[in-house]
Image 1 (cartoon, rainbow, N blue to C red):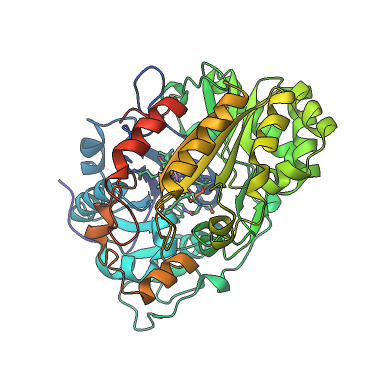
Image 2 (spheres, protein in one colour):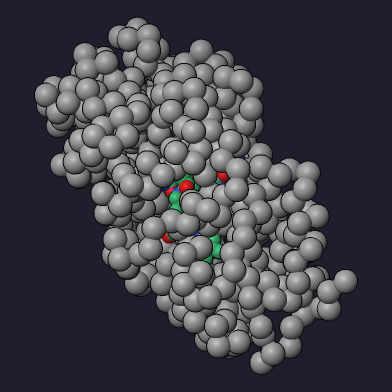
Length: 458
Ligand code: B12
């Protein structure tokens, strides 16, 4: 048995244990083999080298991969451990809370970071079983924390991006716009050895490859879509990693995992079209596997046929394009900045280059006329008619805190979840907000999704 709680001043952390909670998204992200897709725990892999450089040991407990064993492993932690939890909004909060309570009883220190914390730093610090939280890009605040830990001290004051419990300086107006940015190329490469068994992170993807692994080469976004939480989480900054480093990482990743395809999860990979092209050339030269990435519709609009053909011959097989709506008024409201009347042309352009599109839409917009549901479904099926290899998926609007859409609805008296517990229980796939969503449409949308996309089971 471990003793409970290290005393102030006698802190002696020797190991950082990264924890990845389950997302419980199996109904919406199933592979063709009927399993929930499993994504690489990139936050842990990117942050681990910072701890190692300070002489700390690192471990990973991924509850998605060890659904029956993780509790036992967390229960074996002790006062020399720091539990570092990565938290998305939604059901992932449940395991995060449970793991943190167990670890806390074992005397470990607890820190949370990730998208949910970046949206609600002060609320998370107050309501979650944590000793500190880190919001925004984790690198600098995590380094600050580790520097204290290395001197056997828990930080006593807040830094930008780092909020610590039991200080008197809790800043209610903690704002992400003050995040300090670090050039990602100056950071160490991700510590891939943190993952012992890569097999669980390989997903069969009909549009990419039978053993697809995911990767990111950049974080954040400078666009200003009114419904997306990314600008707030990243303070509208796009941090890019050095391309030759990332291609070397991709090569190592594929060798370790036996992957035969790569899916890039950068929020907006083609934001810099020439960077994307350089990646494409290098990737073809060094790895030569099929790959996929995200592309804004206006970037697709600007891409020439030659550009797309070159990408395709380099191995690009699929792009994710967030169209949001075929209605110009809704696209304006969404801040998406492209012309949706050109959707068929975009689909044709990709089809000509033999690059599959995964086109995503959102329904349930404030003030949208009820016919927008059927127009959206029609537009999605129109894309499939252009090329049956294209896919589409329709989501209900999720008004994220800190976004213009959230503020608009708040002003109208919208009742959003208030507590950590309430945010843990929201289900993104339901038409849950009666003020904007028509629950009668849930069935219709889910039926359409089942035919439009291979990733939907419900
Ligand atoms: C892979 C992924 C998923 C996977 C699951 C991921 C998982 N956790 O298992 C799946 C496909 C299931 C998924 C589903 C959804 N996702 Co998702 N997903 C992503 C994606 C594309 C990549 C995540 C990633 O690896 N990023 C790379 C790492 C390095 O970034 P990071 O995790 O943010 O980590 C950095 C910081 O946050 C911080 N940090 C993170 N963790 C920690 C921990 C500690 C201790 C510290 C110190 C710091 C720290 O430091 C890191 C380095 O800067 C991101 C977009 C993106 N590119 O980030 C969206 C994203 C996380 N998803 C998002 C959304 C909205 C969803 C869905 C709601 C989408 C939808 N409508 O379908 C669902 C919800 C599912 C559910 N039930 O909860 C939002 C997050 C919103 C939120 N508040 O949580 C994001 C940011 C995309 C967006 N802009 O909308 N997603």
